[in-house]
Amino acid sequence: MTGHPIVEHIPRLRRYARALVGDRYAADDLVQDTLERAWNKFYLWRPGSDLRAWLFAIMHNVFVNQARRRRYEVEQPLDDMPAMAVRATQSDQLELHDVDRALRTLSLEQREVVLLVVVEQLTYGEVSRALEIPIGTVMSRLSRARERLRQLLGGQSVVPLKVVK
Amino acid sequence: MKQITDSDLHAFVDARLSASDRASVEAYLADHAEDAERVKTWREQASALRALYDPILEEPVPPELAAVPHRPAWHRYAVAASFFLVGIATGWGAKATFAPGVQTPLSLPRQAAIAHVVYAPEVRHPVEVPASDEEHLVRWLSKRVGKDLKAPHLGPLGYDLVGGRLLSGPQGPVAHFMYQDARGQRLTLYVSRTRGEPRDTAFRYSQEDRVSVFYWVDGNFGYALSGEIGREQLLKIADVVYKQLNP
Image (cartoon, rainbow over all chains, first blue to last red; front, side):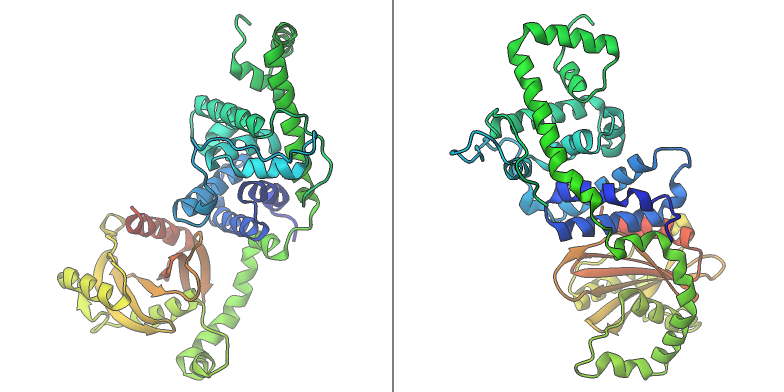
């Protein structure tokens, strides 16, 4: 029962979905919808091409369709909302919890790019194809996301103190 | 490398530079403290994000997710499903559906498949309102179902609208559109209100006896396209239906 090539990518799809939407159950719903669609369209996948990038592209489409229709939009902050520091003032070192909260304040577009590049370690070209945006847009979203996180986290050194599961 | 850009700094942090470009960026950073500080912060962000989310890779995959890419197993249940369909059609299932306290409502694809097998073979009365009266049909069904409906146009795919009818489903009125190709092959589109909170799903596929069904939920309404044709052929049509309903 472990033979299908899609199966080995499920843990990474879950990691990305959880980082993207935050809530565990909403994230697994997103993974399930992605897998259903991938499974229905598997005959469209070209053997030899990167299955992982193809799956992230499908997840992006499912996610955007759902976000467009209200499901995750409560989480969508405005791009030009002023950055508000989320760091606890009594500590000089950031906890991972703060990083997670800072990530939530990024726009969905920036969050997708920064997670695909940093956590999933896709190349810029793969991100560009998965999200169907030009490389220049990948770079500008990445740049804005990183700068915004830097602002939010106050440029302090980030030391992993505890893991938020 | 002539001039170091912001993109080079990102590519440096993400380890996407060649050895020589990497050396140029390192040399540049040695002279530019502010950029060196940014690069340092980005690296710290990256390791924090990975530390946060990498543990998810170690979690066991929920069985309902692991099961999705093994759908062919479904076909083994198709026989059982066909017995179930017979049971429903003979009224045995109606008891299960309407008996108070029994919480086993028919799934959307099964409701749609049943409506399909009941009406698609009709020769003289396949629909209540024919396609020649499409405007009235759509207005009437929209009013009864409580949503502005459209009858998708599938002419380019070889299927013409035959007409439609109003059905009674577990959630009240159901709009039922019928299409037919030149060989008399029929497809039906079943549109019903759904239970519970509004939600959206991706396309799902179900094989109900000989009937293939693609279905999805969009807000408060469920849509199911049924036909006795191959899954891939039906998927293409379902895609067109979906796009016409969600322009």
